[in-house]
Image (cartoon, rainbow, N blue to C red; front, side):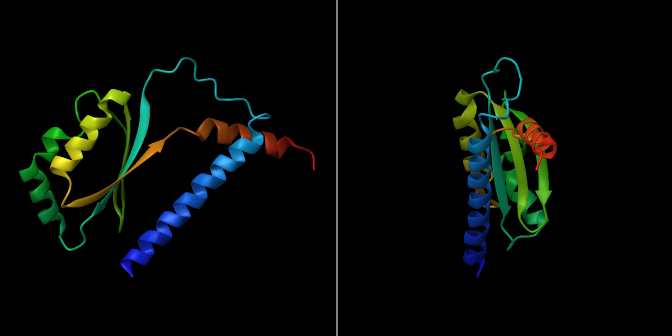
Length: 143
C-alpha cells in the first residue's frame, strides 16, 4: 500500500512538472523571461527527506546527532533557500549552491541522514515571476 502511495505521489509530481513545462513551452514566445540580470552561477536543488515512520522524533534526532548531521548539513558554501516540514512526509529543503558543491551535499546526506530519512533530489528553478507574468497576460487577454 505504501509503495502504491509513493508511486501515486511520484505520478502526480511528474504530471505537474510536465504540465508546467508544456505550459511554459506554449507561452515561451509570448511571455518574456524574468529579468533577473546576470546569472550568479548557482543552481537550486530541492531535497525531500522522507522520515522513517517506524521511529519517533527522539529516535530520529538521536541517530542524526550520532551521524554528525547537525555539523555536516548543509555543507559550507551552500545556502538554505527554504526548509519546510510536511506532516506525514518529512522535510522539504531547497538549497542554492554552486554546481561544484553538489557532491558535497549528496555525501553529507549519505553519511548522516540515510537511516532516519529516505532522500529524493530534484533539480529546481524559480518559476514564480514567469507564472505571475503569464497569469497577468492571460487575465488581460480578450476572450
